[in-house]
Image 1 (cartoon, one colour):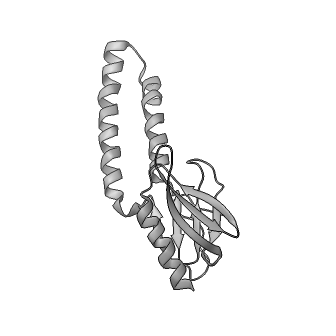
Image 2 (cartoon, helix red, strand yellow; image 1 turned 135 degrees about the horizontal axis):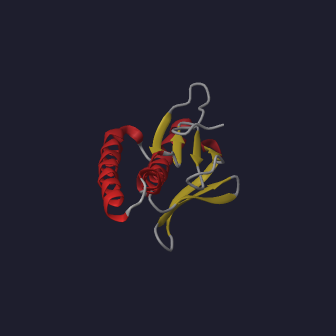
Length: 150
């Protein structure tokens, strides 16, 4: 079971790295404030110049902002002191879990569009992250947490 911002942790488990990191929440609040201001200007302009009703215009402009806000604030990858948790898509509730004591190797490979993180655990390789994730700190956090757990 997971939460929107983070997964349910086991007793005593602590988060080592989270992507996206929500410690800079003020930045996203500022971005959303600017977007809302732009939408208010667009709302007035569309009502006055194009004849759209305010309700239709508000729906037309607010839905994309809410979708963007949902995607950028939802966790995609978390390294704890015991597990690696990764969400394959931006909206699904499903996530993959790899116990760090089962990790045999973790490496960075060149992908078609971005570098990707490949984890080998239990004799299987899994690509856990690609676009939008800086792989170096994630790999370092996995290795460090795995060594600390051993």
